[in-house]
Length: 426
Image (cartoon, rainbow, N blue to C red; front, top):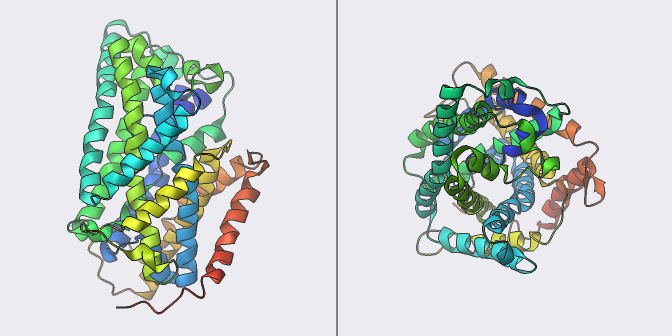
């Protein structure tokens, strides 16, 4: 839900160079990933309920803010989920370009959504086990590339200059935004808490362990290609790099077979990220419907205990979103996701003060003030992302204005659900 391997790091290298990219990849987790992982670890273990962060915010701040949390997350998903089937098609085009020409590209994207929908209907366990396998499969060519690159550097030592050389034209703000996007999504794992075995024990372990693992899988390939002597400008999207640049790097370092495996890994990345994120987001309409904030039919479960109509509902929305052409998907995704993330940290602080005796199998170390202040780092980074997006355009509108209109529309939709609202059953 957070990481599909090093895919997506290309723009960080191309925008900022190796040295700054490694600094960002090494420092950002301490102010972004770790606070979020600790927050999710405490709240998911204390309130292991289907719906996750939506339930946390609702319990702390009431149904209105709970609805806004779910609204921001679902709105962000429209932009986030459109990225992954598109990545699948882009990497498929590197193997078989004729298969993605014209109408074939959107059909392949729809096929990814259909396959993930069918897989999700089997339940969280099936999605989780397949995700582990796919993650190992897509990492394999990078493991080979890292070993070969370090072997060449050990014998020739010619890559240190590339590692330290700055770019003549860099974009720190853009690189930071892409870095935040690559490290976000920790709270998505919370929405399937009722389907997780021993969530009080396993959520904190999963959050903290994954934070370390993701940082390593990001930094090691970047170090390796730098030490192999590849110029950071080869990852610049203005120089025919950007998405897919890992393929060219693998071909130079380890040969055509590993390059082909990197392409296949890119396809796996697109489908592999979409699958668990679908599992996460589809639980939100289900939890909202149980509270009377969405149509009742979304609460229907299949034999595996999966909210199948909620999954199909989300799949239809994301399929329609594939036709939209937004210039800066990452920017709008960050803005909407960031708004929801801030609400989660506020919920953490409120619950610590209002319900001090709540059973918390995992508790963020330190006094209550630590739980209150732990959200400062993510909040400042979100504020910087907002500042960086101040001049960007989304569908012809200023990105911040576009995001504000989507966010404020959540209040209007909430008011319109008055006829659906009812007192939740036990």
